[in-house]
Picture (cartoon, rainbow, N blue to C red):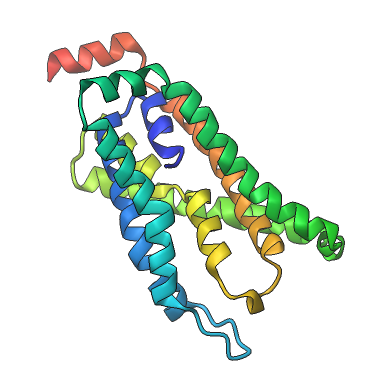
Length: 223
């Protein structure tokens, strides 16, 4: 669903907890994002958000695939064996669809010459702002995990998953918004750039935060 679970595992975090948090956060996001956007954003021009329609479409595009996948995985040993066999191709296929979605939106906007009016300084400012917000989320979740006394592996899972913003959910919400809000390809640009900077930062953090195998074994022995 997002890169947080994979990064948590790369850093030596609790992968099962990371997956559970990913599913829970994505599920809550389906029902909270439309209401938060309606309350916090002012699009002007008499534009109103179709909150009910947004939730309905998000359920079909986000929750339904998760439910179907879980149902297939739980249907029996044969299904689990097939998933294990074709897990990597399915992951590559999913990633390809994730890449195609913003590519289509950006291509449409580019063909209309929308990006010609965007200054480089504005693009860099959007990337810097997205990176700054992500750093704040990382710090808040790290401090919160320490206050709660979570173990090191659980802390890593919470920090990476709870701090990440999922690009697929963002683009899904963007596709549902009314046409009057502006060019959706242009709106998607800072989200895509912010997601890219998030992955770069989190990959560096995960690599530096990874516990060496010997040290990890010592911790488990002491525990």
